[in-house]
Length: 437
Image (cartoon, rainbow, N blue to C red; front, side):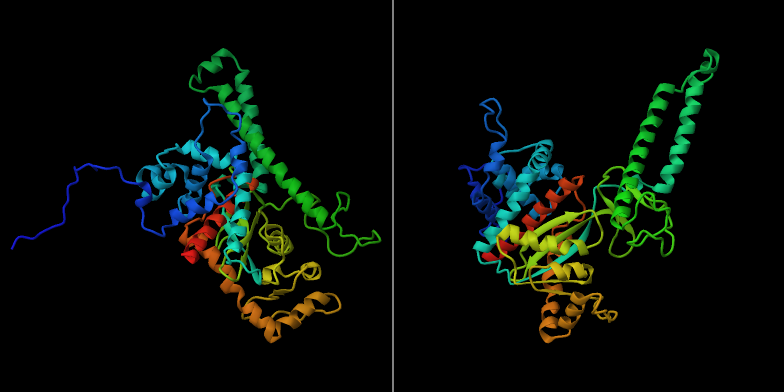
């Protein structure tokens, strides 16, 4: 018996045009993002194009925002890949509705609207609360290191900078001597373009000098915060001005030899990555609501330590939602007497690594830390802290492993901070789409 197949006519054209809204199955993420963006206030995006006239016809801001947010939500971060998806992916084509912006246009739109995209994160958090997905009961604060858009091979240590400056100065002097030589000496080196060689080395020398000065400026600031001064003769001084304690290892404002500066993204810092090794990276902070794992605050900095972020993250939650959470939990990286003293809400913060006993706390010197130690021994404290890992860590895992966001596309602290909020907004919309469906 001859097999019977369903009709297959690849050369057959459609007799009636298909509606883009019917291309995807019901409940698809693209539909949810389409409706969610339409519910947000996009006036700030439109303001940039006011008064442009009929000749200046940019792509519609709502379309660009939808495409960009959906791209991040589906793990597509490169503007070139987004451009390709606009031709190949049904969801992208539905959102773009017949528009095909080039990768440069997409890249420029993202760069021009950093503040507006950051503000959309707050709108999405408030929308999640209206949907009943944010309760502001327990909020868990956590940090994760995300690689900067910078090469480890385009960084240089302070020690190597000093050596390279000497070497380049010597090479420049030698080239200048050669340039002043006689025509006969120049004739023996016909392939050497002396002005170009001098200019290249001088540009390299200037870049290294600027990087060294940035390192020294950061070290001076760090030394001032430690209570040092430029005339301390490397000796710690007490309140009465007398010398005490061991001498400092370095002069005031002089970085360690191994301190590094990156040339491609100077705002990034060398940070330890999970599994070992070091990368130029940023420290991304999230505050996650217990109810539905919605990120209610997202901030970012270029210092590896987490302790200074606890109070700013609590304040960011209040700024975004107009209300403080009932409780905040965090790991031992946020341990600080100042944090425990100044927090406006109840805290449960570990004082040591999980599974290990922490050192005895001096209650006279650190009364608030001692109170935290006592709280962690209660059933209430242990129960509250036991939820920290379950609340805080899944969103970081989803960002890196589900969405695939492991490295920033942009460079510079303020750009990277905005891109991280875009990532968190995209993740929140994914969660909201699943929970609303």
